[in-house]
Image (cartoon, rainbow, N blue to C red; front, side, top):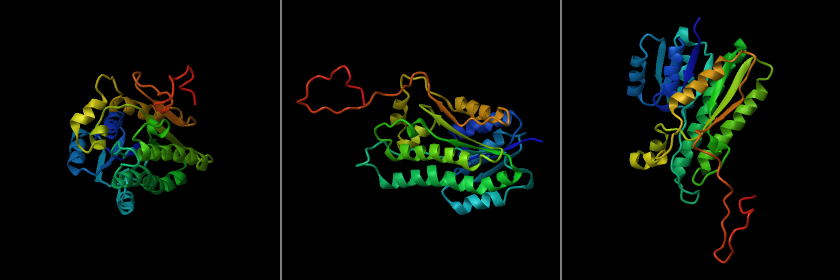
Length: 263
């Protein structure tokens, strides 16, 4: 019997690549997203694979409940939930950021992930099997200017994933948090509100991760032996590293000493 994966945010980037990767392995797919035309195009592309496509805004708890309630009989036992839907908006400092952008990120990256998990998890617990995979980010670990609320939402994803593991320790349900670094997809286009020229500068002169790279990791964490849980995967391209501590010095200060990057 083939397994079933539910993928949120399947219309582009990581989600679409994961749908394609799992389809090659013969999995049944429940693909969701807000863009109906893209869902239909993906379902058509995956012809020959059992696919249930459903338009879904994860911020709407009623839509989430209706999605699960109305699943066709052959798709109701979900083996893997991939909480992939998420976004960053803006790169302004906290004193200049748009509060509407903050609210959208919180509603999508935190509340949407919680809605899906809470709706899917009871059936997994009843069957005593399943896998929750949450798409986090290195922004939830390492701060950078302008990541204020976005980084905060991904820090939530990391801690929520850890607490799920604690809650489910007496079950055979697995929980994994995947934290990508620099990855080229539609992420920056969304962050900069459709400014493709600005988005392209983010990846200029780099060799970033690709959605296919992340799809391979998602598939791998589901393929290890059932008694093995991959708690967290932090992944960056080799061209990316962690910056030194930022220290602002007054103009009258002398030149920095040898330990200027120390905390």
